Amino acid sequence: MKHFEANFDGLVGPTHNYAGLSFGNVASQSNAAQLSNPREAAKQGLKKAKALADMGLVQGMLAPQERPDIHSLRRIGFTGSDADVLAKAASTAPLLLQACTSASSMWTANAATVSPSADSSDGRLHFTPANLVDKLHRSIEPTTTGRILKAIFSDSRHFAHHTHLPEHPTFGDEGAANHTRLCHQYGDKGVEVFVYGRSVADASKPAPKKYPARQTLEASQAVARLHGLADSHTVYLQQNPDVIDQGVFHNDVIAVGNQNVLFYHEQAFLDTQEKLAEIEQKMQGNMHFIEVPTAKVGVLDAVKSYLFNTQIVTLGDGNMAIIAPTDCRENPAVYEYLNSLLTMNTPIKAVHYFDVKQSMQNGGGPACLRLRVAMSEAELAAVNPHVMMNDALFARLNQWVDKHYRDRLSAADLADPQLLIESRTALDELTQIMQLGSVYQFQR
Ligand SMILES: N=C(N)NCCC[C@H](NC(=O)CCC(=O)O)C(=O)O
Image (cartoon, rainbow, N blue to C red):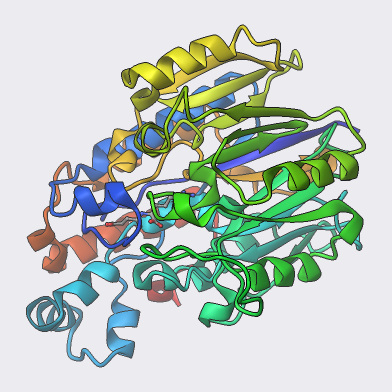
């Protein structure tokens, strides 16, 4: 049977805005209070997703979440009509309103950790939504994320869904952004590499000093247990705390893997040589480790351009291509590196550039926008077909965006009760397009 890796991209929601909510994420902080363009953001994302589908890859879309999240605002004591709740939150606690209005669920690399059936002990594909406890605006995502995933991967003979980990800093979990599944062929049992920023139990491990380490070792281990992964095929790797302090808030800002390729920055990890040897041994050889030296691309250039927040995809002919943000083409050192990479005799033979600047300004590159699900043809046949990208869905979603999305949003607009109505109207229609059922609180 044929196996492949599908990408499920997050559809950008109607409240996409720049609120500067992510301490430690340089782009989010430096673009705070800029005007955003939700319509353009959604269209940039759709264009990238469609281009991958056109390359012959299996591509799906994940629905955005309900924002402003009136239910969270009510839970913290704002009362009255929906418009009253918005007005009171805006005047007394604008930060809380911003947190409850972020479209951050668009970065589906943080939606969940996914283990393919070849890796799990029960032969099913496993999903654990990430609790995202490090950031208030993201910590309100996992329940709805779980519902959306269940509405798409509903067949329990193929798919197993877990509840997100306990909402405590011990289990800080950022999902697939800190997880890379390596393999030879997609249907083979792979090696799942979990990259953590700190350990709660082991104080001897170093931790960053300036910015938070969002992912803990304890969370990674819990997910591996839930998914029934074998120790012989699992590797725990610590991220270099110094690079977290330079703005590498997720591992996928400094490393990316696909099949037997691991593409990473020289400074990405701790104990690099020892850990790469463990990966090589667990993969039983034939790995391509592509290390980018600091002398060629510094950490700051990597963070600015998102060289490692690229997608590495395997095309029909077996060759790999890199899906990069146009920011990589605009950075001379990075562009030169990517051009030289194509001559280096690795499986990567092409680079394709996409403009996802609306997302980039919040620290989300091409790889943040997608959740990878390696699966078989039989598993794909069990997926809700109405979320899969094709000409018809692309046209339908573009029309839907044109109909419902604004082309500018400022901080002041977040309190506009009309924005809430527009957002709910759009999402209600989207659940029909994607046949998701009532996944949103306002529909229940
Ligand atoms: N690297 C991956 N996989 N994802 C990127 C997530 C970016 C997101 N930005 C934000 O949430 C900014 C929102 C704001 O400031 O308005 C975050 O920091 O969690």
